Image (tube, rainbow, N blue to C red; front, side):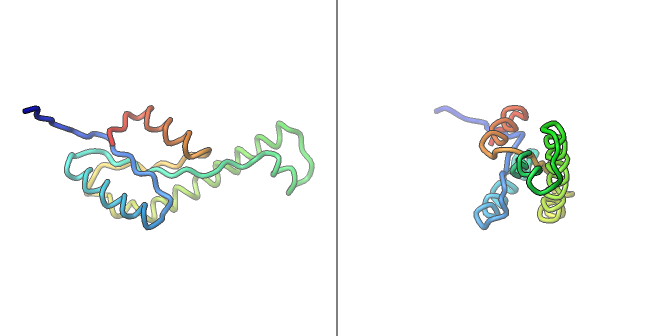
Length: 122
């Protein structure tokens, strides 16, 4: 008989605030409590297209458009982080170790990248 002693240290929950994400949160939270793991609550928002910046504002160089789109991405990321905190912070604080993370980009790329960089177990 093979005995497995799983010990999760890092659990990743990707959320889009849907009902399915809520069900996943409950499961991930329970597992974080059970294993004493850190729950990484993760959201990805789309990046601003620099070409779109040029449409809505006065004409600017490519470099200016990229800088402006990066500024808008960071503003949007901070706003999304605030939303993440509103939904999850009070539910996790003082109960489990957790991290609230918002990245800008493509969800499939950012989720895999974050998982690999942070040694996700579940």
